[in-house]
Image (tube, rainbow, N blue to C red):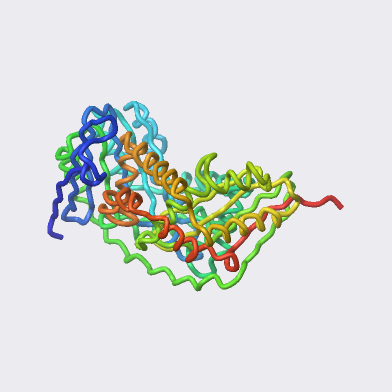
Length: 437
C-alpha cells in the first residue's frame, strides 16, 4: 500500500482554534504504514502522560454463533504472555513504568491501552506491539481466563439492570449479531477451544485491522516514527469483515419476562435506532440527553420525581456500525412493569406530538458538548475518541461530531422521535420478583 500522510489541526476538528480555557489545541498526525496499519498521533503540549491505544476492527458482531464470546476471550488473553514475555510480565512492566493498562470488547471493536508517563512512551509502545502481534495463548492461561470470563458472565446475570439490557437485545433482534451478548454465553465460553481462539486471533489481528493512537506529551512526528519502527514490519493477512444480516423491522411488541429472587422489578424497553452512518443519529443523541441525562431531563423529572412510577430511570443510545437500540431502562417497586411501561408510552406519545422545547434542546446540546469536551482534557479520553472514530466511523467523525450536534433543530428531534419511537412497535424485558406461593 502506498503510504499516505495527513496533517491537520485538532483545533479544526473540534470546531475552534482554542481549547477550554483558551489553550491552543494540539496538532494531529495520521499516517497509514505500508503494511496497512494506521497510526494517529495527537501531541498534547505540556501533558505529563501519554496513552498508547490500539483499536482492532473485530468485535462480537464478527463472530459466528458457535464462537460467540471469542473476541472478548481473546481480549483476555492478549496480556497473558508472548514469546518474549511470560504471564504477569505485562502488568509488572507497566506498573514499573508508573502506568496502568486495560482493554475492552464491544460489538464493533476490541481495544487495548496503556497509560504511562510521557518519558516511558517507547517502552509502552513496545509492550502493546508485542501483545498485538505475538500473543502466545498458553494453555494454562486459557483455562485460568476461561474461569474469569465465566465469573464475569455470572456477575452480569446477577445484576438485573445489566442483564435486562442484554436480554433486551436478544429479544429485539432475530438475526443480527447484536442480539448476542458481547461476552458470549456460558455454553459457548465453556466449549471454545484454545485452537479456536488462536484461529480467531490470527484471522483478525493483523495490521490492516489495527489503528494505533498515541495521545499525550510526545511529539506527533516522533510517535509516528516509533510506531513505524516498532510495528512497520508486522505482517499478517486478515479475513474480510463479514457483512451482518439485515435485521427485519420490529413489527409488534416483543416481550420477555423472568422471575427472580429480587426485591424490585427491573425493566428495559428498546426501539431500533439509526447507525453511525445515518445523519439521524445526531438528533437521537440530543434526544436521549434531553429525556434521560441528569436530574433536569424530561423523563427523569416526569416519571421518577413527579409521577414516581420508577425509582430509577436511564435513557441511552450507543453509537454503532449497525443500528442499535434506543433503550429506556429503570426499576420500580411494583410487582410488574406494566404501570411503568404505560407511563413511558404516554411520554413517547407526548414527545411524538409536541417534541422538545427550545430550553430542553439547548440544555441537552450544552450537556452533550460539555461531556465530549471534558473527555478530551486527558490523553486517555483523546485517544479513546480518536480510536473509536477511526474504527467505527472515520477520523472525520471525530472532527465533525460536535458541529453536527450543534446544528440539530427542534424539528429534527421531533422527526426522529416519530421515526424511531413507535409506541406500537418495541421490545420490552422485565426481571420481576418471584411471588411467594
